[in-house]
Image 1 (cartoon, rainbow, N blue to C red):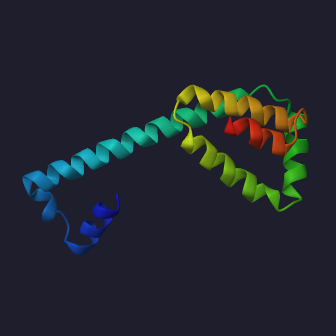
Image 2 (image 1 turned 180 degrees about the vertical axis):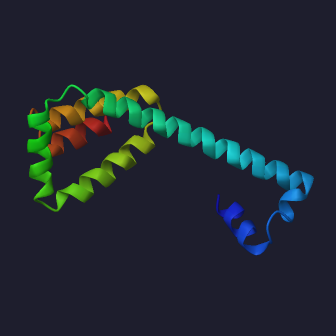
Length: 118
């Protein structure tokens, strides 16, 4: 991805991409990035699906709790990183179940982080 960015910046529009070997390399890079994106979207979908059964009152309470603290940004960033690092789509469902337990106050954040590492 960095190689592509540097080449795109250094060469005018499409000039280098017209060379057959380089053009094929760009195609492979684009396809691999699209596949990674598709898997990430699937993991996000599974994660959110596991949270769908949380009642609105509980969601609102949780959002208010983290909205009034500095944890809101940190939790969101950590969730994205956790989901991205998962090596299987189904694991995002399990991560969502753990996060649901955290939202419902069945476990605290440190237990959520601990179970996530297993």
